[in-house]
Figure 1 (cartoon, rainbow, N blue to C red):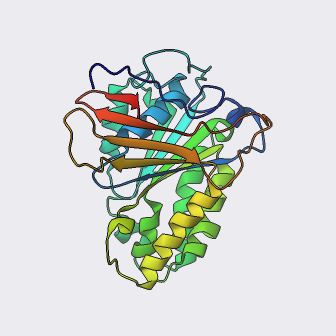
Figure 2: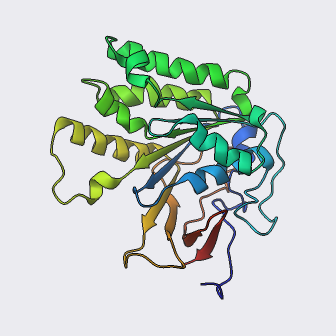
Figure 3: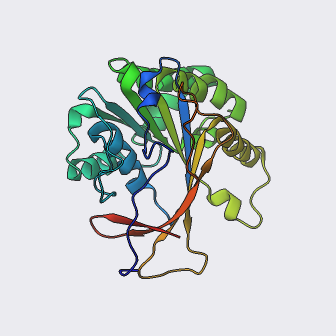
Length: 273
């Protein structure tokens, strides 16, 4: 793979990763949906999206400057996870030299059940979680992206919670509060030959389907079908989601593509498939 030319990550027809139009249009609210498996951890892609928004380009990923867009000192990212602690993100963002005042990390892993779920009704749980995001967004509502890792775990953590409730009382209101919402979900359930056909399993499937339908871009991280390779970690498949892009730029569209990627100790490299 060392003899193959590296490629820049480009997601949209204006040669960008995050189009500036998303943050210029007052009524623009767009959903990204990232899916991965346990063996294809998405941290490098999350980092690239934050880096693009705050610094103007995913410099740690892209060699050229063709996708550099104007950034603002007010550009802000809110990251939250139900499977990783705060340090998981702050350590990697610090390595990229992203100013700490340009992002917030909400920790929904440490003591979440005790502090946020125990003896509370479902509506109260969802409204409290949403309020934490609202507080983090309120200072920069017109220039904020929100990245939330595995919100579908709420379907297992909150007794009786349905996919419709999760969407209507949390995901959709959250999308309305920010310019770009990026949902990162683990799709391992679809790789189990005989997964549990329970109500919770059905809710999970419905959540994935609804997220795809509401998203305007879908990014799939997949392992190699042939198994392990020393010079390739996996593939990134970029495709349109089920929703149109919310922007006044009618010519803007998703550039559907497939990359191979190689995760190294301090960097990730992309190659065309």
